[in-house]
Image (cartoon, rainbow, N blue to C red; front, side, top):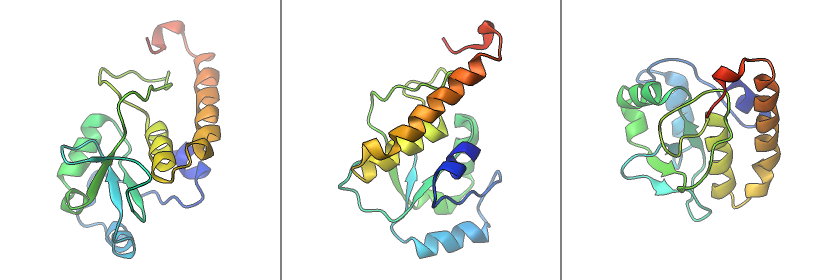
Length: 148
């Protein structure tokens, strides 16, 4: 999340395992009544420029951790859910997952913001820099650790 928070001018990071009683989150949600959660839930709407939101909540962590945060934070369950369309391929080469259509937090957020704002090219430099970061990292780790 650090790369993302340093790359976006209007990004707030809250750390923890549960946000049920997190006053900062509650205050932010009060000031963003049309906020949505980037989460591939059953009722999620596919991100596009027709969705009107005034903020995007993103859970950072493994799928298991994100699910745990979601389950333990009722205020998140009350938010409109937004998901990404199928077919966006991850270029995250540092970590592996068996989940289909799984993206890093930076990738998912960049794609979601681009789709929601109808400005996908706006976030392409961030995705390109993320790809360069991955390639640089891979030059410093043994080949056995690369994503397949």
